[in-house]
Image (cartoon, rainbow, N blue to C red; front, side):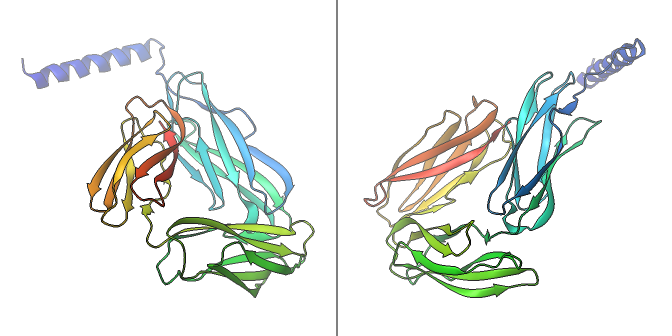
Length: 330
């Protein structure tokens, strides 16, 4: 008897057994997605500069594994994460949602749509309604210049703005390093008023990464001081790309990505280690150009990963490079 015929007979037997079970009153195992808390919240008034964090419990009341197939924020100002993307029958996971209302005024409704394998509840919507008070918004809230050329970097801008019914003045601007300068110009739109900051990183940046901040003083009683982080890396040091590795819903053993490390031809990477058993990394390259391949260990357990890689180098100014890594193992 051929192998194909054996498979056909086996499938026929399974199908017949399934039909017999259904005709006898048996039911197929299916997942069932249930949100424990109210899925739609109304939290009232909030300040625009204060990110709002929410947590929901997604429970599986079915008798088959419930899978989160996608988690989609409804707005660029919203992020969502699940502690687990695979939920066994009778268990649950937490879904964390953060809404940054900095760029809004008035009533907003923000949240996430969760796509599941529950045929009766394919899309689970979680959201929060809030009223954003007229206040000072900082957009973007921080700047990353990346690797700065020897001649300096192009100007980046930041809008500091509020509703016209809440005017304010910037009374002073300061930075704590000489190579970062900032200037302000008036900003006015149909419904906003404020200032546009022009931020420049000039020539003379020290080799290697830098982290500084712009300090903005205002006459607004609720936000008299605003600190805006500024990051980058000076020329002549080591270039690392990406500086942070983020992944979503990867299976154990999966390759998460490659981190490129470059420097002068004398650069050597002597080792890499992780502070989490869920991560594995290997180094390849020579002559000042290296790649660090990052993977999930085959023994990685489901759940969130908040870890870092430490790369040992021969560079005297940067003997160690630290790479944050975050994501979810499914």
